[in-house]
Every structure is written in C-alpha cells, then in structure tokens.
Image (cartoon, rainbow, N blue to C red):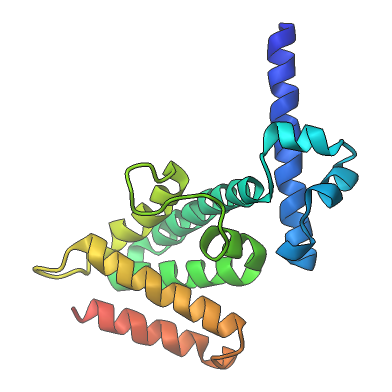
Amino acid sequence: MSVQERKQRERAERERLIVATARELAEQQGWDAVTTRRLAERIEYSQPVLYSHFRGKREIIGAVALQGAAELAAELRDAGAGASGGGAPERVRALARAYLDFAERNPAVYDAMFRLDGGLEFAVEETPQALKDGFAALEETLAEVAGDGVPAALLTEVFWASLHGLAMLTRAGRLPAGDAQARVELLVGRLAAV
C-alpha cells in the first residue's frame, strides 16, 4: 500500500468517526449538543482536523442525513422483499411500518434527513443518490397500486408526506401512539382501493 493510499484510508476513517460521533451525540442529546468543539473533544482530534473534512455543522448534518437515507432505503427494500408473498397491499403496509419504525428508532438521524438543513437538495437532478434510492424503494411498490392515470411518483410523494406527517406528529405527542397501526391500515387500505 502506498503512502497516498494509506493517507486516503486514514482520512476516510476519520470522516466515518466524525459522522458516527455526531450521530451518537445527536441521538443522545439532540442536535444542539453537536458542535465542532464537542466533536473534536470526543474523537480526540483538533477542530482544524474536523474542518479539513467538513466546513461546519451543516455539512456534518448532511453526511449523517446521507448515511441515514442509505440505511432507510435498505430497510425499505428489505421490508418490501420480505412481504413479497402477500401482494402489493402487504408490501405497501410493510413499507409504511419500516418507514415509521426507522423514524422512531432514529429521531436525530430522521431530523438530519428531513427537518434540519444539511445542504442537501431534494427532487432535483443534483439530489444525492442515497436520497433518490429511498424514494425509489417506495415508488417501486407504490407503482403497483397507483391505478390508471395516477403517476406513481405523485402517489409516492403523497404516501411519503403522509408517513412523514405521521412520524413527526406522533413523536411530538400530537397523535396518540396507540393508534399508529390503525393509521397505517387506513392509509394502506385507501391506497389499495385506488
């Protein structure tokens, strides 16, 4: 291994450590607790080292968001594949559960993905692939239930917006947690009836 390869590997490892530490700190104490100073202390590198990887907190949030988006996309694909024997409505139900479970298990990551400014653009050509993959994981199954004249992408946007609203309102205590399954059943039932 050349010196250049070793330096690139070490740089990539430092970047993974920064992102993992930011994610851990945000999940434990919220995003307000994530500062370059605290990150530098936790990973035992100087702040200039952090700034050599990320220009600031916004880029760190973006890196956590991309990591979370890749994880969510994988979970959605797994959920859809795991329910493949039950038909399209069962796959949609599995997607909804997987999405809501991810949002509940990873609130700080979910916030990085959809609530905070991580410098990522959605619904444009420059949208990072990890974000596109999550949308595609939903759209592939929803295309099966879209019905005549209903664009699968449009149905996916409405489904995603519904799930996001359910996730955020439930977390904020605006919706009773005990009715979560009934909401999923209602949403899937209406989609399957299209």
